[in-house]
Structures are given as structure tokens and as C-alpha cells.
Image (cartoon, one colour):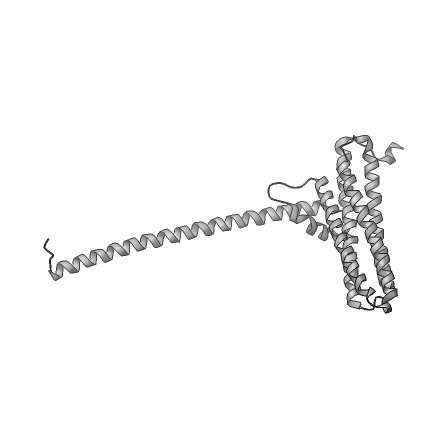
Length: 241
């Protein structure tokens, strides 16, 4: 096969390949740009959907938490459990509130045990240790009461509406007792002479959180029971009397 050596021909051939390569590169670049734009658009759409869903969930929770003494904490506690697939019922919100309170009470009890172990290392802190030990006992009682309350809440509706008032009263009594225990514990720690102001502040902050969660749990439980009564036609005890 004869290979031409004509300079003009070679130049035209080289220009043709150069233009062809430029065209291919341009098409490839255009395709990559379009793909990038598509990915960005989908990301923005997904982000917008998430933001809209979270905004809707937050508005829903603000309505549910408006009767709570600590509404901001109420929304903050419940928001992680609200998904874009649906909004939790008042019953589920009450269960989540109690479960969150129980979890925080357990962590607080563990923290108090750690502080007590530190104080046990020195006899000089005997008075401080007594205040901590009493607080641990109170928080332990609170943990048991919240645990009972959670189990009692789950029984509502499973054994007939005739037992509703019994379950309702038990939950209210036990959560109120846990709230009182946390309050008493705070007072005891503040009056117990904890030498470290930093330690005292950290204990108080944890106990206050338990107290506020217990208060909100009562509010969410009351919200649930009002709706349950209305849906089942159950009258309040005051009306019955």
C-alpha cells in the first residue's frame, strides 16, 4: 500500500483528526456537565423535600407540645422520631416522651454513682456522700416509677376501656412521683454542701433535665388521654360523679 507524502494532504488529514477529537471531547464535556447539573438538581430537590418535611414535622410537634411547661425541649425530644413517612400519634408521642425521660434518668443515676464512688475515696467527703446517696435512691425510685408508667401506658386499650381510668391514674401518679423525686434530689444536692461548684452545677443540670422531661411526659400523656377519651366516649371522673 502506497503512503502519500503530500504535505497538503497530510495537513488536511491531521486537521480532520484534530477536529474530530475536539468534537468528541466537546460532546463528552457537555455530557459530563449535564450529568453534574442533573445530580445537583436532584440533590437540591431532595434537600428541599427534607427541609419541607422537617418544617412540617416541627410545626406538628409545636402544636402537640403547646401544653407542656417546656415546649422547646418537648419539640427537641420528639423531633428525631418524626419521619417524612408519617406523623406519630398522640399515643406514640407519649410513649417516646416517657422513654426519653427514662433514658435520661438512667444516665443521671449512673453519673451520680460515679460521683459517689469518687467521694467514697475520701472520708472528708462523708457529708457530701450522704447527700449523693440519698439522691441516688430517689432517682432509682424515679427510674422504677417511669418504667412502670411506660408499661402501664402500653396496657391502655388492651384490656378494655373499663380499666382506662385505672391505668390513667397510675401513670399520672407514678410520673408525678418521679418528678417530685427529681425536685427533692436537686434540693438535697444544693443543700448538701458539695464542695465542687462545677460538680454541683453538672449534677443540677442533669437532674433538671430529668425533671423537665418528666413534666413534659405528663403533658404528652394528658394530651393522649384527652384524645383517647374523646375517641372512645369516656367521660371524666368528675362528670361521672
